Amino acid sequence: MNKSNKDFNIISRILEYCVEIEDTVNLFGDTFERFKSDKIFQNAATMCILQIGELAGRLTKEFIAVNSEIPWRSIKAMRNIAAHAYGSISIPDVWDTIKNDIPVLKAYCVKILRN
Image (cartoon, rainbow, N blue to C red; front, side):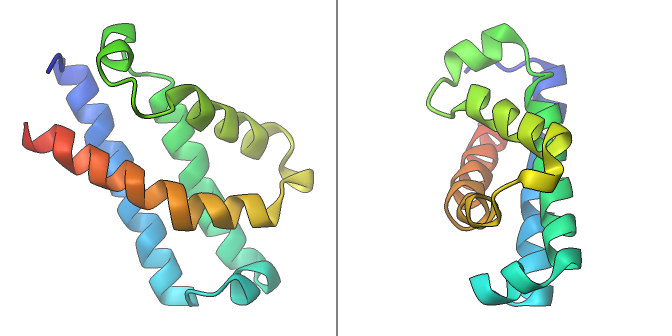
């Protein structure tokens, strides 16, 4: 697997944010109703998603090409939505990202870092 030191460090940091999102969900509660009603919960999770997208944008083209099963472009797009359209971000979409995409990304980062 083509993995530069830079990419390795970025993936390590993305993994940290995935874990931070998990910790946030564990702290606030694992329900959409709680997420929907708590701005602090939303802000904490969305900030991590924003950071993940920012970091994904720093991965090398070679790494992205070799690891194309992860939708890096979509991850960066989610970051742009969180950063530039924050007031109109879809809370259900963020929750879907937290519950469905972050666990997959976390597992993928663990796999990459083990190789």
